[in-house]
Image 1 (cartoon, helix red, strand yellow):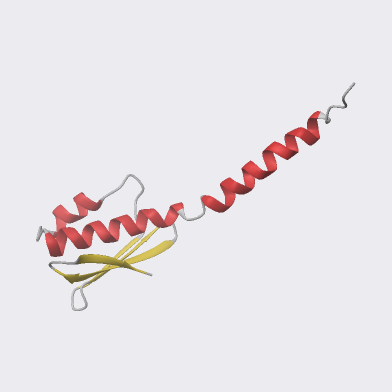
Image 2 (cartoon, rainbow, N blue to C red):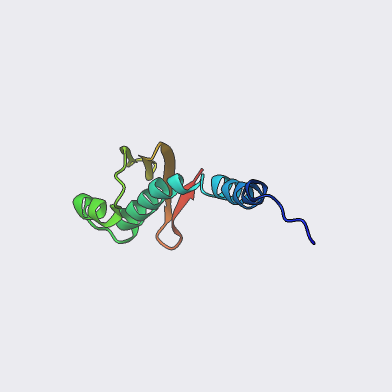
Length: 101
């Protein structure tokens, strides 16, 4: 008769790799909030040439941002959301905006 692994060891062999995969692959999610807001706001202001209030509404997500800075001279948008900072800068009307790390 074959010996079966005890249930706690079997659970450990299944749960530990799953937890580690989740832990190391989901840490970058919080940056998505600030990156999305910065990029969408930049595109809205400089490419679509919409107003300030309209662009804030356009870029808004369900998760609120903590800080927003618009450096008009350098055409740089800096956003903090979920304790992560992202910046987007307008390059040209043909190339649009790009995220800067």
